[in-house]
Amino acid sequence: MDGTKIQANASKHAAVSYGRAGEMIEQLELEVKELMERAAQAEAKEAKETLDIPAELARREKRVTALKHARQVIEQRAKEMAAAQQEEYKAKEAKRQAQREAGKKPRGPEPTPPRETPDPKAQYNFTDPESRIMKAGNGQHFEQAYNAQAAVDEQMLIVGQRVSVAPNDKEELAPTVAVISPVVAEDVKAVLTDSGFYSEAAVVAVEQKPEGVPTGVTVYAAVEKHSHQKTVADLLPQPEPAAPGPEASAKEVMAHRLKTQTGKALYKLRKQTVEPVFGIIKEVMGFRRFMLRGRAKVGLEWTLVCVSYNLKRMFTLKNLVAVA
Image 1 (tube, helix red, strand yellow):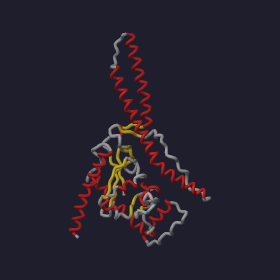
Image 2: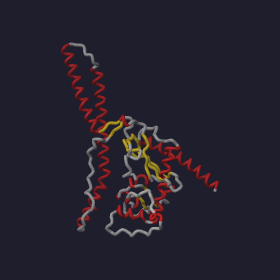
Image 3: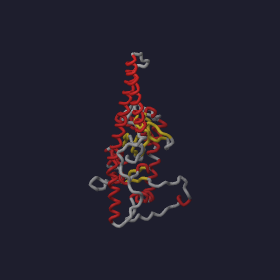
Image 4: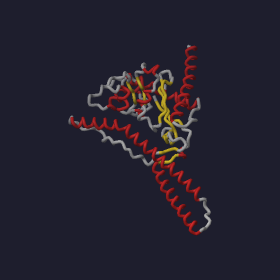
């Protein structure tokens, strides 16, 4: 599983931040007041006004209305995000409290409660309000985009796809697993993801049902950085690492899982399955920008792209079987 940023049919220059929108509203309201005073002075002096006061007032009032709507949308998004993060925050607090009651000192910084107050830099785009400013190109620049998600099997066929407006993949693990086609979902035993998808809550959501029963799916997510340069020792057979103790954190358990022979063999598949799929879609098929606007329509467009890719891939697989 992985996600990639696809440009929205909107310019990032058509966006405004929450803080900047507030400043612009104040400025425009001052200009409206100035125009009203100018009109009153002209009327008192019975002088001809050079400006089209009604048109100027209407333009500014329309802009103020649009900016206020933008701030309301950003505020609502902040509340929804805080609500979504509240359960994870409560779980972390409960875990730390249980450790204290057991006479153990919790490790790591105290969890920060979700904030309903919008970040002053939170953005709203007037062309496609549902798109977001996202880091792209390995974080080298920002684009107005959507987060296109895909789940890919060992034969490089897309078996699940969806579009997210989240600028990162931290909350995308469970939702993307949930859209895997029911045709193959029962056969899925392992989910391979990079570190961007990892969180303890996300792994639990995939590996356990709400009632706590195991789903039969095991997540393999990178939680440590590894050098691409292999040493001689790395090439030699390695003994199985010792199992983590009962006090090990969820992150330490996941790190151990990826160090086992099974974990290494499985995780190696991720680079040769899902990453090439995005490369083919962008480089070979040339799909780098959505034509439609709005998350629902963009989701349909992404589905069409994934179906098109699968048809090409199935044709290739058929030819490979014929040659064999």
